[in-house]
Image (cartoon, rainbow, N blue to C red; front, side):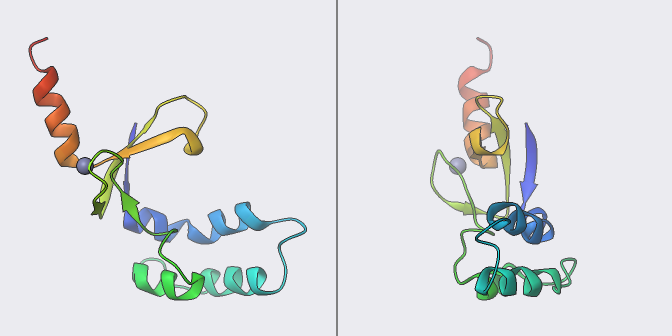
Length: 105
Ligand SMILES: [Zn+2]
C-alpha cells in the first residue's frame, strides 16, 4: 500500500497520458495534450491547470472508494497484486474507521 496525493498525480500525468495513448492513437489532439502536459511546471501548477488541458478531472481526482468523496491524498491498496489497475483507494477517515472496527480482534 502507498499514499498518493494530487501532486503525485500531477507530477506523473504526462507519463500516464503517454502510456495510455502511445501507439496508433498517439497523434493529433492526444499528442498536443501530451506536449502541453509536458510543458507544465508540475511542482507549482494546479490540478485545474491539468484538467483544463485534458478537458476533465479524471486524471487528477482522488476519490475514496468507500465513501466516494474527493480528497487531496488517499492510501492505495493493491487488492489483487496486479498493479495500478487493481488498486483500491481509501481516505484517512475510512482507514481510521476500519482500524477502529478491527482493533482488538
Ligand atoms: Zn473514505
